[in-house]
Length: 74
Ligand SMILES: [Zn+2]
Image 1 (tube, rainbow, N blue to C red):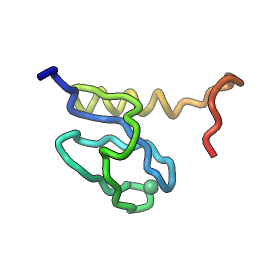
Image 2 (tube, rainbow, N blue to C red; image 1 turned 90 degrees about the vertical axis):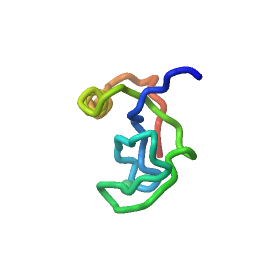
Image 3 (cartoon, rainbow, N blue to C red; image 1 turned 90 degrees about the horizontal axis):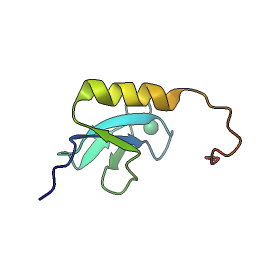
Image 4 (spheres, rainbow, N blue to C red; image 1 turned 135 degrees about the vertical axis):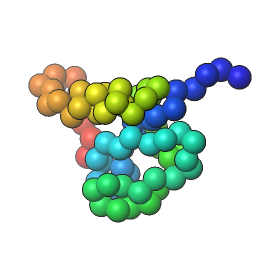
C-alpha cells in the first residue's frame, strides 16, 4: 500500500468553489452552496498531508492567473 495524502483539494460540482476534503470521508458538503457530493467521483486537484498545507494550496489555486493557455471552466 502506498501512502496517500490525507487532505484532497477538490471543486464543488455545482458552484466550483475549492473545498478541502478529508480523504477518509466518502462525501462532503459544500461550504458555499451546501450541496452534498461524493468525493470519489471528483478529480483531485491536489493533496496534502495536513489541513494547513491544504489551505495554502487552495489560496494558491484561487490566485487569479492571466495565462491564456489556462483551460476555461464553464
Ligand atoms: Zn458548492
